[in-house]
Length: 256
Ligand SMILES: NC(=O)c1ccc[n+]([C@@H]2O[C@H](COP(=O)([O-])OP(=O)(O)OC[C@H]3O[C@@H](n4cnc5c(N)ncnc54)[C@H](O)[C@@H]3O)[C@@H](O)[C@H]2O)c1
Image 1 (cartoon, rainbow, N blue to C red):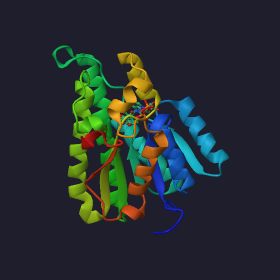
Image 2 (cartoon, rainbow, N blue to C red):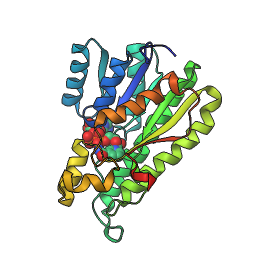
Image 3 (cartoon, protein in one colour):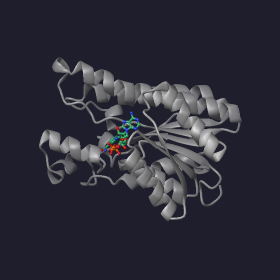
């Protein structure tokens, strides 16, 4: 392995305009990857690119709605046109969880969430894999699931179903593409202090202090950078014998 660990690699990070995606894009750039910040929030995404460039990193923004095939194809093409190749992808973009019990779930939101969190993640993986297969020199794909990919949460039937699905599709892609040295893994974050988590706390009327001990053996929420570090390891050659698995970056939540 060489240092900095992503030198010479080109990475796409979806949902990189804020939260964990932003932290991941910044960390990857600090590790010397050329980073494509992909998001449908253009203003915030551009601001992330500017922040990376201000630190001497290489980055470019592409506007994408990951639920749309043509936009996902264009995202991969943008990475290749801009930086010549694609070596790493973190499929992180997702919608805020739903908020109704199973007996009353909102069908319109079910379809919307599935189109992003499940189908959108699958579309990203599909076109990233095609590019990596074409290049013929391997790659690393990291799909972001959740503790909700392993444990039920009340009132989150669509989100829990989608995040379980992300774990399954990751294993299929790992199995199919291992012979091409394309590694596909999942990171399953616990409760991480991002706009998405703050939104969920507001929705259920909890304070961070009340809720953190229920979700973390460390009695605190995680920081976005702590999840980015897990993705960095999977993206780098340090994890060269790791595929088809999940890193549970959840402060022990799923260990109980
Ligand atoms: N925050 C948590 O506690 C937590 C816990 C477990 C898993 N996760 C997962 O981690 C990932 C990141 O979560 P976060 O809290 O940083 O989220 P966030 O809401 O802070 O950021 C999500 C980003 O994705 C973008 N996005 C949403 N839909 C998109 C689409 N269709 N196309 C392109 N971009 C889109 C948004 O614009 C935003 O920039 C998600 O997959 C989420 O499900 C979050």
